[in-house]
Length: 493
Image 1 (cartoon, rainbow, N blue to C red):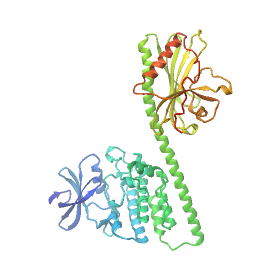
Image 2 (cartoon, rainbow, N blue to C red):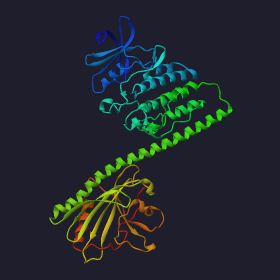
Image 3 (cartoon, one colour):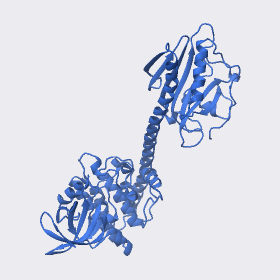
Image 4 (spheres, rainbow, N blue to C red):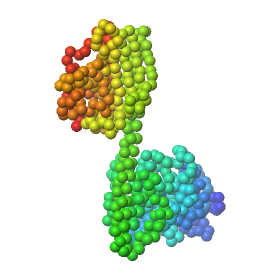
């Protein structure tokens, strides 16, 4: 036991009782106050936020702070000692529907109060709901923030409890009052159904469920509660209700059974809510996929730049007459791409791209994130062969989800007549999916998909530099046979 002098009183602090999200909880008392606890939070970036929030609120459904200050390198908050937490209570008791509704109403009142005070809790869960002074109250604002405060490292934005975390927390986005409403929806589902809506065994599984999976249907036959929870668990934050709306639903949840007409209307509302929730979950999944593709595209650009620079710098370093040029152009698809070229006496070697590939415009057997091309133009008048070009695709052609750069090229099928000016030739994924189907189409592979060794691209570099040298001597000719290599259907299907 130690005596701790705080801003208002001296407190006796005794044995450890437990731990909150960011601090220890110990017994505390002084003359006139026999049942209190001291929460000790290490003084570090972000910790002062709890002290600030705790001492600046006087809300009926928030555990009050009786005193505060600093002691031995810790922030100290003195609070009334609760009878028990909601986690303890639901583990030790069988609750009626009326009692569950009353608990949820107290929690919703607390959320409504902190929202009006400009606060966001960010870590709502049964452990952080305490029964004290004959009411359920919110506590443990260790990662809470003022709603309008700027987001920085001190807000602990990457800290949350995975089972109750909203989609925006998994994406490390700004938390709002809607974030607390999502956690409330998880708690309400758990309280009414006896289990959590999402129970993934790993963090990755939980992330996927919270981001994209609609919760299982509820067994409780109270349409108003089903709709309320469904709305709280919407994936899109802007689609979730306010605490005030939730309180209105809870106020009428235990009403007598409705008339047949109203029951029909409630059923329609329930069905609409479920369909809306599914649509919003699908929208969030598409959004996540777009974000994932953007991240992969950035990776593709970085690795492509290394490959391009290796080829073109090798040429420039080995001949003083080579001229390097780089420009930006807009494609017919509206993309801005970089075109870089090296020109010598009678040939130009050009890299085009990369650009991102829109998934809805490619129907092939694997995913393509980005595409580029390498083109060799033979400008000599002594050779009627204009040159060749190959595609470079950043895709997962061999193993699902494992992306790398692949080289490939195409030719027109002899059965359909016609011939490209330059053959083999590069093609955009959106225009060439026919080459990957199990039919003979207008185009087919002239160079098989070959994964580039980015760690040691010497074979690729030497081959293109060799062709570049031949073109400058007017000795680059159309391949005598095509495909030039055996075409194996080594891509996954």
